[in-house]
Every structure is written in structure tokens, then in C-alpha cells.
Length: 254
Image (tube, rainbow, N blue to C red; front, side):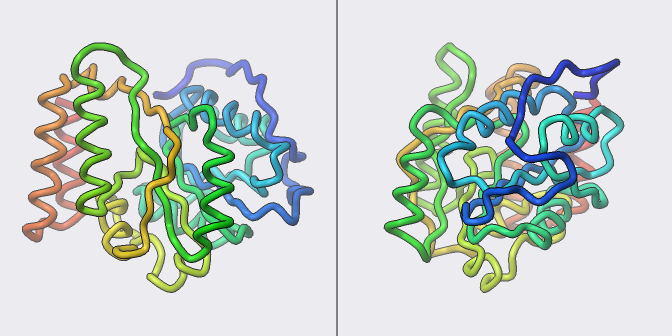
């Protein structure tokens, strides 16, 4: 969602704009892909800012695909680092990972907010499972019968099939990320590809992330769920990411 006019910002990630973070011993680089998200990213940045004194987060990198909004001002005001690349989440995340300095990479979507208790759970994973990637349990910021059903299916899919999606968050040791080839530079389905690459090296982290339900509420919970299923099936049957991205864009405009 693009913003109009100045964005009121009261978030600080504890680093001076344009400078290397002072927490040089902290292990975690947080990567957030952005495209026309505007002020919608502020709750995510606020949750990270509240955890900056825990000694885990070294830097926050906004991987932008050419937004026409206030993302540069938001990065500057909050102390995040901005990396600009061609659009496409895989392309953006690969670009951010190339400059990340942490021993661990935490990938969050711009509308995904870590819930209470995530830092101790993440620290436990880093200390006890140093060679394993991890993902969080998904929840939505909405009430009613559909949100727990859709989130429950996503959590089951991740646990049984090893396919966490990007809105569940993904924690990856840098050494493992490099060994499996990192994010594919594709427009869509990058989360599925990297989950496959991490097969056998994924564990659930016992904490939640809360993702915006706006897209489901806009499209309809059942309709969007079926569309996600159809996209995954088409990808599994060989449809290319660029074709899927164009189809996805047409459906959103429709």
C-alpha cells in the first residue's frame, strides 16, 4: 500500500542512518522484502525495535523492489538499511542476503509481526540447533472461523511437508544458506524453492508470527486459499515463476 504525504515515524532500530550497526557481535540480519508497503511496515519494525536490546539483531535490511512510496524515508528514520533491486521477492531477498553481515538470516514479510516470546525461542534455536533453519507458527490479525483454519493448515503443511511459506518467517544459518544456493532470483514461489532446498534441515520454532489478513479479507478467505493452492499446483506441474507472477498480478488487478 503506497502512502500519501509524510509518514509519522516513531520507530528506532538503534542504528544511525547509513552507518554500520554498533552491535557487531549480534548474529542476526533481518531481511524484509518491500514493494509499495508504505507505513504498513511500521508494526513489523516496531516489534524488531523493541527487541534490539536483546543482543541478537545486528541489522535490519529492507530489500526494496522499486517502491513509489516513503520506504527510503522510513529506512532513514528508523535506522534500517535499504537495498534496492529489480522487483520480485526472490530477486530482492538474494540482493539483501549478499550484503547481510550476520551469521544468521531472518526473513520476514513486511506485514508479518513477531509475537511475544519470539526472542527467547529464536535464541534457543540458535544455540541448540546451529546447523538448522527454522520457521514460526503462523497466526492472522483477524477473528472469526476462517483465520485459525487457514493458519492451522499452513502450520500443518510446514510440519508435515516441510513447506513453510514466507509469511511464517524463515531463520537460516548463513553457512547453510550459502551451501544450498540461497534464494532463487525469481518473481514468485521463492519461499517454496528455498524450503525445498532446505529439506531435512528445517525445524519449527515454538513461537508465533502474526501476519496481516488484509489480502484474505479483500479476496475472500476461501477464494484466496484456493488460489494459493492452484498456484502451488501449477508450479509443481512446471509453470514458470514469471508466468505465475503475471497471472497473480492480473488476478489482483481484477
